Length: 131
Image (cartoon, rainbow, N blue to C red; front, side, top):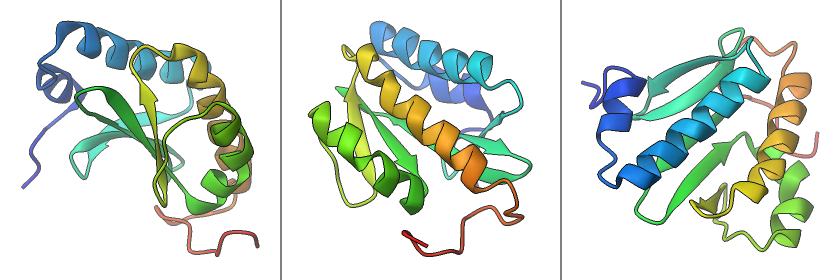
């Protein structure tokens, strides 16, 4: 069973009021910039989809937002992630709450993924990175 039924419940789970406001600002920015995207809570985190396929997901943590994207988009954005000195894992990267200037990386990932997955009909991309 899902931990959060909707985005409002997810936002309510963020204890720090400033972090909650910043996270909501991020979600609102994505929705305003790409109004065709649908935001739903899946796997206990807000995710944005386009025509039923995953575009990007966010997880609110104590000091940062963890961003999850498709491997192809992550690989595409890696130079900018490194240039901005953002901490990263194998498939995710972190944006500290105080770094809204790092949203440029999100814009690059979202634009790339929308274009790259325009013909993809599955939720997750089954193609290999670099193809």
